[in-house]
Image (cartoon, rainbow, N blue to C red; front, top):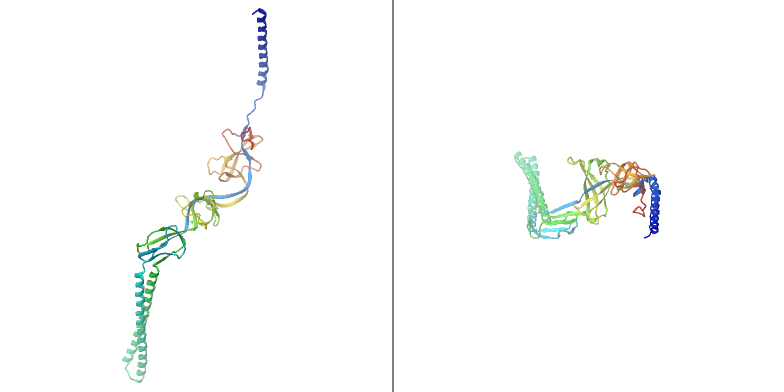
Length: 388
């Protein structure tokens, strides 16, 4: 390589170094002089909403039938027949079972015969009474004419009183015998066990051929067409509850399907162990879809608040779940602003805000750890979930 070539290479290298030194020199002052820009936080927000708000008291408890009846045998004896099994629908006065009536029929016939005996005795006593009356009349006439002594006249008077007492005794015996007939007749009738109420057979206690004693239960009948929802409420909510208020509830069996009833009874005593009061709501279940013993969860509608200010539950920060105070963030002039609010009530995923917000406020509905008061924010576009 000759000296000319070496000189040319050196010139090219020096020129490149000078160019690099000049770009770096120009760019560094510009970069150093650019003002710092605070980063914007992209948030998800929406305006507050006005709507009618239903104020309700949450409830939970078990459904129970208003009619759970045991059909019992009023007489003892051999069970000859049973006509229903568990799960069958029974109407009022349906024949449920029959008990062997032989002994009761004999007892009835015996009582009826006893009535005839005492009726015959009564007839005889009446004959004797009529005879005694005639003898008394004859004695009265003879006494006037001097035909009998005073002693004989007194005997005639005594005879009539004795005859009348015999008639009264016979009449009492007739009443007693007829009462015995009625008892025997009822026992004979009770051999046919009739349903005391309508319902579904929950349990049958005995089968055909069983030997029963008086008062033995035969069937347990449950009427599910008229149910009650029994629940406990904190005593401090008692002032909000009124008779007739609507109760709305769901059951695990039927998922989100809603059923309705009405408050029918408030227990007059607050339970001392948990400071709660027992509330009953009457449920009409004509479809029969609900069953006694089902668990139910819902609310009693206390009143309605028109034009309530409502925000999503995710927008509210509270110290406690049931707290009536909390905080929200709103977007104002491109910045986040923390607001203290008073909560009316919370229902599922919505919150009624009584104080602290106004119409037109934009509320942040997803609060993350990066969100601070006074931070520059930008509301995420609805069609741009990534915020880009």
